[in-house]
Image (cartoon, rainbow, N blue to C red; front, top):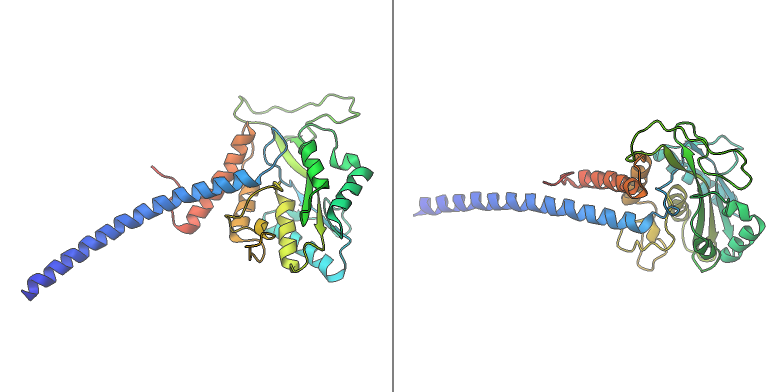
Length: 297
């Protein structure tokens, strides 16, 4: 009787183990699918390239400058943003370099933005196709009450020669593009970030520490982030100013996204395909970290 009971228990144990194994595999597949969905949702919310263009990124070196930020805080912001640049594979300009990432502190963020646009309109609207977001976006940059606001300028360039691939006001010569790829599935045009201006409203960032502010600035400096993105469902520094967020800086999620952006082959023929390449790299890395399969049958 006892042996029979023991044998039955062992058989039941093997059945339970078998069932658990099946459940675990199912969980992995479901988890992989959920990762795909979350990554797609995040990227669809966050990336805000100019109309018709794929995501832009810095090509070579960056130079971080600050204005209206003093002493220790200024140096920390420069050092931290530069450190993130190194982590995504960029180079840092030599001391005395001309800033292409400018972070400005202000007691009135909207007023500062309006003043800068009025004083230097060509800085914010160079006039070349595909270099910046819309007039409505520029107006939003100058209004509202966001604690941090930013404006990117990107330049479509010939990937073979590095020369500008769009006409600018005053150009007399035609633009010539070296076309070394065939078909419509690939493009020889890439989109390089040229400058970004970030304005911190110091009154509205009160209570944040240096790390939080610098990491937020880094996230929007290295990626064309939509100011209206809803990232409340994600573990991201972009949720820093939401009432429910306790994020301390760039998260693993953020760094996987930035590294995917800078590792992606962005030579696909359409902006949607280029964004999809970033999405695929990010999803694969998140699945790898979670132990989920990279592909599903």
